[in-house]
Length: 178
Image 1 (cartoon, rainbow, N blue to C red):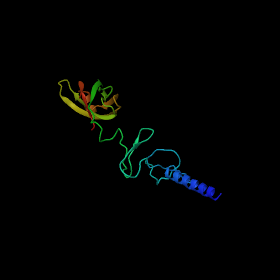
Image 2 (image 1 turned 45 degrees about the horizontal axis):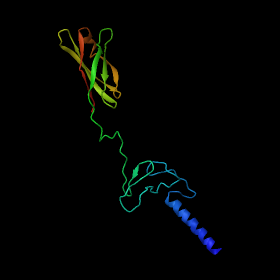
Image 3 (image 1 turned 90 degrees about the horizontal axis):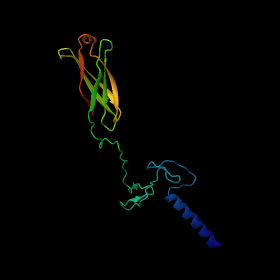
């Protein structure tokens, strides 16, 4: 009977040790995790949940295919939109759809974005007289969705030019803000 009591105590201590080492605790329930995932069981935020041993740089894969480094290496997870890997933006195209007039002092321009992400483009319009001389220039910016297009209405550079305005010329390249 004395041996059975010792064996029972040993089993209880062993079970608590295993639970403690695997991140389970008795009585206290915390939902904090150092690695940002909600793994099995309750854990304390001060515990390290690496699946590797503390004796070197070995790595072990988990069931979901991710890899954890052994202690003490801690680093942030890289993202796909990291500025270090982002490609520079390509310029877009601008097409004049309608020139300003006395009836409507706004020019309409369609801007296309060839990039795989949203971008801000600068558009320039020159307002010309019948001789081809520039009366005024106007620039404006428009945000265009990834691989999309946007319509921009630009006010003429001043009401004094509208009575001498013959035509508008838009710069065909919409400059992407870098």
